[in-house]
Image 1: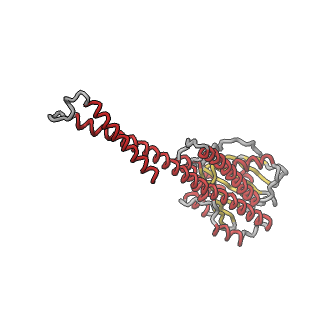
Image 2 (image 1 turned 30 degrees about the vertical axis):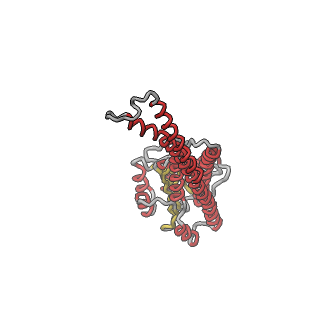
Image 3 (image 1 turned 90 degrees about the vertical axis):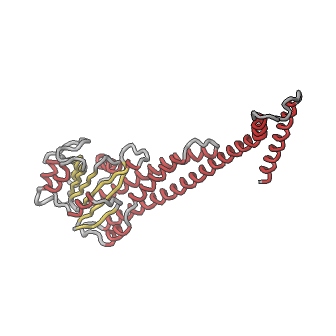
Length: 339
């Protein structure tokens, strides 16, 4: 069997990479022709399993899978159905997993979240995605380094779920750092960030939590009645990985509540500043009211304007305006103290 080195882009069949486990201590990288030769074997060596990762954006990927693999029909139905919530189901002696992940250079945009599908049997692990994702890349790097040898197909799936949890932890840490900066600016009186920034971050976190949280019912059914080829140790690891994931999701919920409180605090600060500005505007308007009224009345082009012929008329009007302005200012200040 010929082996192939890893290349980042997919080949003509849509295969991004492939690895054979169990033949040697180090997993062996395979191309699509070598993978096809291994799949065509009638008697496969015990302890060996194959991992193939496909790019579904390649038109030939699904055709190749239909032609050369015997995946359950539910797997293809899952690829095209609308529900993409994270779940693992037991179908026809295989595990079908829907895993949501974030793309490289995640920037807290809703479009940075994408889905990956997986089919796991005792001898074949098949993963497929439409956009490059962080968790699956972390898993590939772990397989290449081989610091923790992967002994079964379910262990590879558990490793993927833990890598996904690690990616989510990094996202939460990044979000916490951003929220800390916003909170520091708020406490220092520098109301630089807008509520829209926090709102956008909160929407992305809510969507991440909704998509990444495993469906409890499907997971409960799987853990209660796993396939016969799944060892007790792998089943326990799968349970622990989901529990670790739940802890991360709980931290994300707490972060959402913190963002909500910050939004309310920013809104209160903005309302206070608007109230102060409105009060200053009201004072200026009240103080300018006497001069505007008197100037408007004396500016009428009619006969009988008082003090028109009096040489001291100007100063008399100024005195009247000042008197009314002082009285109006005193009334406003007294109302402010009483309120």
